[in-house]
Amino acid sequence: MVILSPSILAADFAQLGQNIREAEEAGADYIHFDVMDGMFVPNISFGLPVLKSVRRITDLPLDVHLMIEEPVRFLKGFKEAGADIVTVHEEACQDIVGTVMTIRDLGMQAGVAVKPDTEISVLEPLLGKVKMFLVMTVEPGFGGQKLIAKCVDKVKELRRILNAKDLRTDIEVDGGLTRENVRTVLDAGANVIVMGSSVFKGNIRENVAFFKDVFKEYN
Ligand code: DX5
Ligand code: ZN
Image: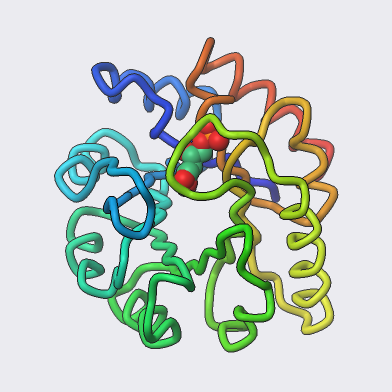
């Protein structure tokens, strides 16, 4: 099943509750929550207090993407704020396996992300240990960028590796996905689709309905 995870980084923060409600009512499956620390990525977004407020207004799984250095320091806080899935960057953790185990021990689902220039082979020690891998399709840090084509090949490579091991791990893609290019990542084997601008710019309900309709071809 293909999952739509709208990234609220592209929402209107003055209308955040309303924006999320519209996405949810139109059929969004998760809410993607981008946390940036100004260190791991050259931008700052939002954090725990905002997550806590979002938790109060939706029952959808909160898909938290931590673009922060040594996220292990904050995992308990994210659990308490209501995160369901926590994805950490392989590049940001000294002990990636230990960090994943901490996420799981706290009762959350674990994901591991890689930036466009990070090889898929670094994920080898994590096979079978995570719910999801996130293959970034832009350099993390900003919404509204253009998809980097070579990242689609990484999705294909990862799906091949997972299939060969009979693993049903989710592959999430994030960044630069649009009505025009979403089929390329689906064809490559991604099944959790993050979209910021393509959902929250323009008519949210219409955008969600459009993508859910495309996903039906893949279910
Ligand atoms: C980028 C974030 C993305 C971002 C995607 O670092 O991880 O989730 O919101 O935005 P779009 O879909 O506009 O590229
Ligand atoms: Zn993200």
